Length: 405
View 1 (cartoon, rainbow, N blue to C red):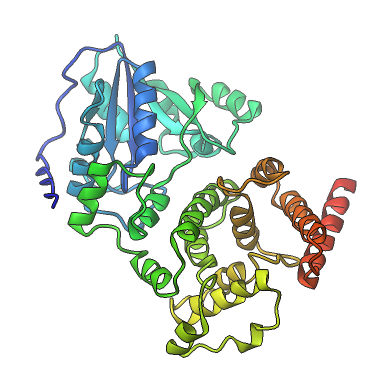
View 2: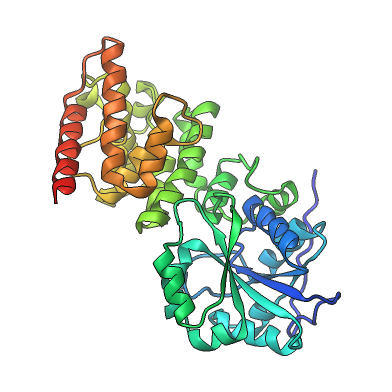
């Protein structure tokens, strides 16, 4: 049985300067809630570019005020476990010790005081943050004190005009050559609940999380998955779809927490048998005449409402329509539909086009995905569900209208 690593006691003063001299230093900040393999790979990439990398866990992100997180000491301990073997990375607790909202300008000022003028300081940001960078606290002073190293993320290609505007405003930016891993802390927390950390969490970090009882918010959903016999293969699909949904939600401005919950529950009715439903007092008779491929979606929405306590109509509709599609779907509904149909494990003719379109234009992606689904149904000689046909016609006409305008 594994033994929990003891969390380090936070210092009463900010962390000391780097142990080794450096000419280029990258500040790699974040909530690290929890630290995951994407963070680790990003750190390795930063080490190839910079002499030294400082990982700085934040106390309260200005972008996530009010969000639940693990205690600071636990996040610091997990960072130590994840980065302990990476030469060139050091961890600073300066934001944790300082307290309050973790503004970038305060952190950069702190490190600028530590390093002399011969050290070039870079502040690392994801490419999805570039559009709002000029609105950051004390932006002009931030530009004077550091350069920005922009880590490219899937679906967030920095427009030339944005880079040009930032340059005119005094910002020095450098774009990473490679895209960072498309993993998020929200996905890591879902992986904890479903006990599938492979490729998402470092084994030592996962062990620490489990023995510390951290990140239990999705545990009730995982329990329902077991109760309704979701199965290993379908659970793995669910986590892959969750990864895609998170990326699409960030790209299109949808609430990530809603996307995660909807996708974690989208297939909950897939293997639900009548006996289990009956034990829960659920009556799904009204759906028994629906096509076999479709019926699990409304059953899943029923389980989500009655067993998981979901009351948000947008989440329930996203689960209800994730297989058939529907006309005039919300942004969340489209994200869940496309995450289910185009997650990384899907392999069918046209899937790459659907994935690419999903990051660019949800409506065009819906038309393409629905057309592929309809063609597949017809090729197999199966009756086409009317709702799918209606959805396809709706998005086909909508895109024609938008192209004409």
